[in-house]
Image (cartoon, rainbow, N blue to C red; front, side, top):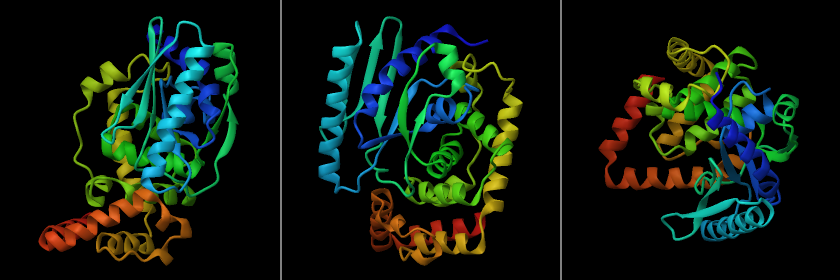
Length: 305
C-alpha cells in the first residue's frame, strides 16, 4: 500500500517542478525523471535530482548553480503559500541543495557539482498521464537523455545498491534492457564515478533489508519483494558485464592507465565532461604518488572483466 507521507511529498514535488524548470541550466535526472515522466508511476519518487548542463569551468559552474538555486528558492517562497525553503551549504561555501517544506511534506532539490555537462541532447517532457490523473496536476520539465538517465541509474544501483534504484533497474531490464546507447550512458557515469571501476562493476553485495523496509516499502503498489531485489541485483551485474565488448573493456583499461583511448567511445564530448577530467586528474596523481596502488586497481579490473 502506498504510504500517505510519500503522496504528500510527490504532491509538493509536482508543485515545485515549474519553478525548477525556469532555470534552463538544469535538467532532471534520477528516480523522479524515470517514474514520473518516463514510466507510468510504478513507484513514488520524492527527490529532484539535477544535472548542471553547461561545460563551464568549476568556479563559474559553482557560482551559477548557487545563483540558480537561490532564484528557485525565491520563486517557490513567493508563489507557493506556506512553503519554506532552506539552503544547504556545500563544502565550497556555495549552495548545491535546497530542502522544501510545506505542512507535513518535505522534499529536496539537489545538484551534483562534479558530474556536470551532458553527452546527449536533453528532452522536454510532461508528467506521464498516470501521474497527471493521480494527482490532478500538470508539469513540464527538461529531462536528461534516456541514455544518461538509465546509464546513471545503473551506475547508482551498482554503487549504492539501494532498493529504489534496483526497483527502477528491474523495470529497465524487463523493458528496454541495456541498449547500446544506455550502455554508453553507463560507461560515461562509470568513468566519472568516485570509486574505482572494478568496485562498481563487480560490487560486494550489501544487506539492504533495513533500507528496504524503511526507505522503499510504501512507495509502490507493485509486487517487489526483497528476494526480487536480490535477484535483480545479481541479474544486473551479469547483464552489465555481458554488455561490455572488447573495445569497451579496452577503453576501461586505458582509462585506469591514465591514457584513455577516446576513439573507442562514439562521442568526442566524453573527454570534455568535468567528471571525466576530475577522475583522470585523480588517476594521474595516484600513478605519480603510489604506482603500486594503481597497479593493484588495474589488476583488480582485469580480474573483474
